[in-house]
Amino acid sequence: MALKLIREFSHVSERCHNLTRKREGSGLMIYQRTLASATRCSGTGLHSGKEVSLTLRPACANTGIIFTRTDLSEPVTISVGMKAISASSFATSLENRGVSVTTVEHLLATISALGIDNVIIEVDAPEVPIMDGSAAPFVALIENAGVVEQSQPRNYVVIRKPIKVTENGRWIEIRPSRNTRISYTVDFEHPMISKQFYETCFPGRAFQKEISPARTFGFLSDVAELRSKGYALGGSLENAVVMDDFGVLNEEGLRFPDEFVRHKILDLLGDLCLLGHPLIGHVIAHKSGHAMNHELLREVISSPECWEVTELSEIRTREMRQAAMPFRERQRRASV
Ligand SMILES: [Zn+2]
Image (tube, rainbow, N blue to C red):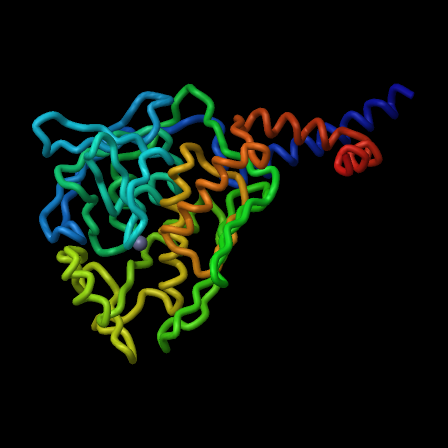
């Protein structure tokens, strides 16, 4: 009898151990993280066309991600979160007390994908520099600064029930999942793009290799209108993929044949950062954009029965309990 119990316990213990390893293998982190040191770069503002300096500084646990506009007589801080969203056209803009910062999504995607919870972002202009139109320069910047683990546990937004937003054949939804996954479809009536699909998981090296190098893109036919409205004044072939009716105008061509859908994943990952905590869920997007991404986030906030904020250790404990539970009991609870 004793031997049988030991065998059963070993079996459960082995399963629990495997679950723990799987979680660690998935790249989900238990503790909050920040930068090991301050780091700085400068570049052109996509919309203003002016030079912008960007400084990232380490921050204490539970600080979150905070922008500081240093070009004003009194520096103004803008906390990254749903309440700060001020505009969704062409880029994601955040605002506090009438002071805004725009084109934040590529930097936020990088911060999120590299597992950073707490950071102060100083900019001396109303926008983040566009760099080369991708997130690769921000990856290099953060990897150069280094990342350190902090003592406080990290909270996750864990999706428990599906949430979906639909409009005119376009849609985006989040479903429960054991990790963070994005599946994206774009469909443009253009010979270089047409229909493209890409799926990837975060966090992990996939972001650095597959997503961060993908550049923002636009159409030559839209440039005049954008500029007449004061947008894209700093846009050039140095920081965007530009297409005419037939193909890509950039001499070097594309970085990936499906660079467009990869960039849409980058934008979406930056928008998901506005939830305030990293997400555990599967996001499936079909022809979405910033405005629809933000609409999904609003739907999440207004559906508290579909998600919870919890620590990874709590999720693990529940999984271990469930793994140790007899099969019939698990089935009974799943059907309640
Ligand atoms: Zn973008």
